[in-house]
Image 1: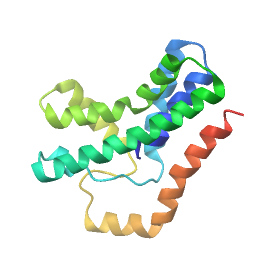
Image 2: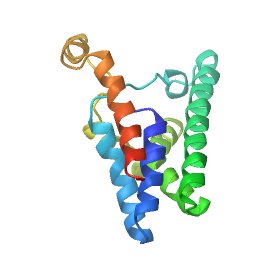
Image 3: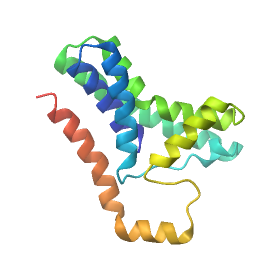
Length: 163
């Protein structure tokens, strides 16, 4: 899933709960739950395989994704007047598992990062290195527009939870 829904849902969790341990748990849990539903991801093969030509393109996609997510969080902060630190904590933790995945690409020998990557891949809707048959099946079962609309729905649901 792109980062925007993870950022928004993490921030909403921070708004709805006062207990820091609960915010940490729910924001992290939300990441894995959102990754389990049909969605679209953009390629980060340049980062994964350290391909210089694609590396900066991939970093640019991530920066744009985070920037748009932060704009939404600033909007949420103006609506709710909740502490920016609290919102940032929830948003950061909502995306933290993807940060661990990026770190695993750079430190593949880390046992902790490897264990997390294994777990993250197991629950993730899009499995790494799918076979052509799996791609074809996924395309038939979960049309492209459905996979985009799930992310839009998550963002809209997040804003509805503010009401």
